[in-house]
Image (tube, rainbow over all chains, first blue to last red; front, side, top):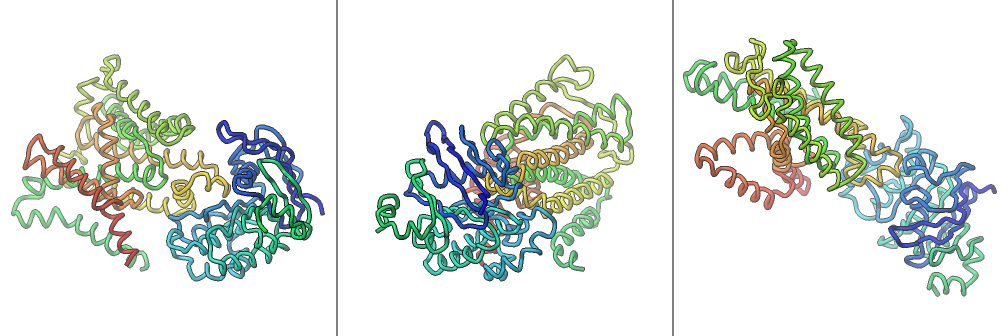
Length: 234
Length: 324
């Protein structure tokens, strides 16, 4: 399986703080790779560096063989990378339909992808005219993921989709992500190890801004010591 | 048919405004072009012009979320461009309109290209500096021959058919048509795909970038549209006053735009028109009743509105209606 995304030794700063101190990872085409680590390990910063919201000072990021670092966020998104930020990042002042339509890169994208989107998130179909800000937390998260699916992105960067949601909603989202496995490649940041282990087939563990280990998710699930040490989960 | 149904309120208001001079003439028994009917035609014509100016600011501040402290530079540029070309170049009205559009388009693109590189309060300060630059230019005695310096550009010749003095009713209808057309254009822009991106930028600019939008380019488009509309409003104001003065480029003129938009409801469009009416008419009544102390009282009214109607009159009404 060739790698769709390769991050090689990136160093990213926020202000004067050195957050990423050489993160490296690769995401095989068609896989769901979970980026795991404790709070403050640098997971979100890694995603923000890949999408171009933060610019790494050194290291390289390659997407489908093309260099990404140094490009602006909108150029990186146009290369085929969809980003679902944390905290249910929708446009609250737009309706559900407008939130989806705004993500079209080509005319008719939404019509072409609506079967998949409404199969994954049937609730959204009934709320098309409702303001994004009036949706529940779970619905907003579904909308945020759905928005990234409108354009045919080859890679989705999804940040903490289960954060603050009821278990039943988390299950729905996990099911949707698993269903996407055949459709696209996903790099998933997730604090909820149980969910991540159900959804992802690969993992990358980072701690203190450095990559610690990576491999098949099944191996990590079996490695109690690593899970306890890096994730604090027993 | 659907347009008529969904715009019944607006159409009724326009119909009422068309009938207004005739009804007032009937009620007062005075001729259309004299006394009370003539006075109120003038008062409302100013509301329509201010309404367009407020709409232009709402597009930038309310819809796109870009807070400018220099919007008056476009209003004043429109007024001075029209005045100078009418008075010294003796151009006709249509070429003058075209010139105002070109001048304010170039001006807004240049100012936008330089100032939109920074955000928030820094952007507000840069636009304030640009506006001050134009204000100083308008007052500079070096250009007195054309601008009238601190005396302003007086005696702008307006085509006879549009004279606000002798053809007040025509001026009233032209300014009403101008306001309605601009409102429909701005509403169309806001509901277009471009408008949705502008709203998304107001909501969260970084998020809009990660969806794939060059937000700088979209903000520049908003600034250009907004600048041209403010310029056209400035031109109409010069035609109404038969003059242009440096005050049109002052911070106070920008603050007026901000007040109108906040009073009506930022991002609501129709609220800007209401805010213009409020500023003009309440300002007039307060001035009539209390004389020079009226700005103090208007300030109190403004504070009451902000406290009790935090999203402006239309904005709060819509929010409460949504909550059922």
